[in-house]
Image 1 (cartoon, rainbow, N blue to C red):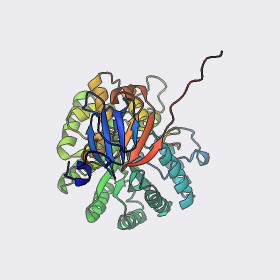
Image 2: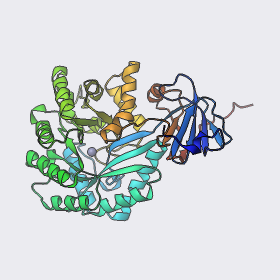
Image 3: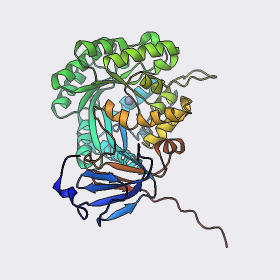
Image 4: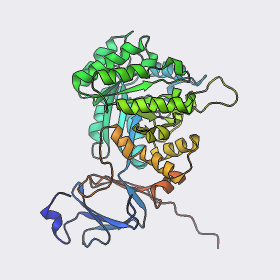
Amino acid sequence: MPASPRISLASAVFDRVLRQARIAGQPEPVDIAIAGERIARIAPGIASDAPSEDLGGRFACAGFVETHVHLDKACILDRCAICEGTLAEAVAQSARAKAGFTEEDVLARAEHVMARAIGHGTTVMRSFCEVDPRAGLRSFDALRALRAAHAHAVDLEICAFAQDGLTQEMETYRLLDAACAAGADLVGGCPYTDPDPARHIALVFDLADRYGLRVDFHLDFNLAPESSNLDAVLRETARRGYGGRVSVGHVTQLSAQPTAAVDRIAARMADHGVALTVLPATDLFLMGRGIDRLVPRGVAPAHRMAELGVTTSIATNNVMNPFTPFGDASLLRMANLYANILQVAQDDAVDRVFAMITADAARLLGRDAHRLAEGGPADIVVLDAPDARTALREIAPTWAGWKRGRPNFRRPPVVLAPPPA
Ligand SMILES: [Zn+2]
């Protein structure tokens, strides 16, 4: 911890002390002292007359990291019809709906989802934002307003995103360029909707390269590995020296591959520095359509690939739209869903899955050291459970959260009524 005269004094120099917290790597409960926006001290029995709060042995962590959500097209079930439940239908339905989006409309729906996410302990978020002739820059402007209005609560990064193809509609490229110039944090593409996937990938990299941004692709979103575009992404990553700044989402084709093939792909992704995000709710909902028995799950085995060196995360993707007509933006629930689908049981594997919504997810975004530490930001989320693995197994409710030392939310615990007299 950097030396600081302010916190070297014995007491009365902290703004707040959270007492009796269980944290990762500490066998016994500790106190967490906050000074300004930072964690000043972590130790048992900190002497201080600053306001304090007893966490009662609950687990505290640095909060959940959402690596992949679409705030711009969340909560639009009222203007879409789901008949087939296929990916093609979802793309077509949301493309039609977004032509009618207004900035106020996007902001209101995005704020609703963000409020849910904050209450579920999310402190960092990457949202995709469709920028094309139908949406124009309206959704982008709305998410920029959202980012500014909620900067105290969530670190939001906005990915200017080509959902509906690029090479057949180059106006989208010009709008992406404008969004990058206007402050998009990264740029994303979706080769599977483009008639020329390889050129789509190269164009998205061109933009990223020009503005010095990271890239994120929706990739290989079917169960037919022979149609993979991963090679094109790996090639561009290597050619441009982009390792560590590239992520791909879905890659459901991996769930249709034998283990040996998945391991070979994992080794190449790790070697190239290309990270993977799985979206269990959407992948489950959209994959395996048209199959009436033994329906495939369609979720890539990301925790296995993490063991082989791939940076991986589990994320929400869509909430209440034709891609996923459910959702509450709870990453702990999503990690629990993933663990169920992938039949994760052992303690160390459950810990690995928890990392995919915390430390590993932060690394995917290029943020290191996402943990509670002296000198680090006072981003603290308390779960009503004694440790991470119990929290994930139970989908434990959040209890309270602080962002940069400031109270962010509080969730009153359920109180059961007494039995009748
Ligand atoms: Zn997505």
